[in-house]
Length: 182
Image (tube, rainbow, N blue to C red; front, side, top):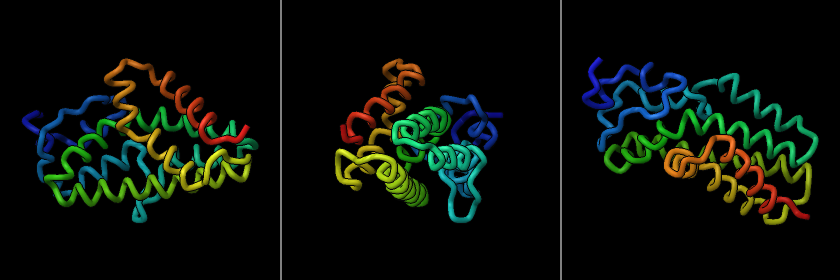
C-alpha cells in the first residue's frame, strides 16, 4: 500500500482498531465513496439515520439509562467517551481540518456536530431525571458537548500526555462539579 495521501489508503487502514494516528494531509482528497462517514461508523461513531448503531453505542446508552443515579450515569458516559474518543478523535480531526476545503466533508462535520449536540441534550435529560442540575439543561448540554469534544481529547491525551484514564477522571470530575447541584 502506498501512503502518498489519504485518498490512497485502504479504509481498513484508517478504521483499524488501535490505529491512533492515521496519516494526515492538508486536503481531504476525494472521499468519493463515503470513506469518511463509513470510517466514522466503523470506529464507533454516532449512528446515522441510514445505519443502525453499533453494539458498543447501544451498550453504553442502555447502561446510562439503566443507571440509578446521576453520578453513575456520568461515570458510564465518561468511560464511553474515553473509549470512543481514543478511536474517533484522529478521524474527526481529519474531517474537521478538511471541511473548509471540501463541501462534502463540511456537511459531514456539521451533521456530526449537530448529532452530538442532540445526544448531549438526551444525556442531560437522563441526568436531570436522576438529580437536580446546577445549571439550565441547555447550558448543561453545551458544557458536556464542549468537554467531550474530540479536540479536547486530542489536546489533553495526544498533545499534553494525559493518559486516557486521566481524561476519563477529568470528565467525571468536571461534569459532577459543573452540572450537579450540591
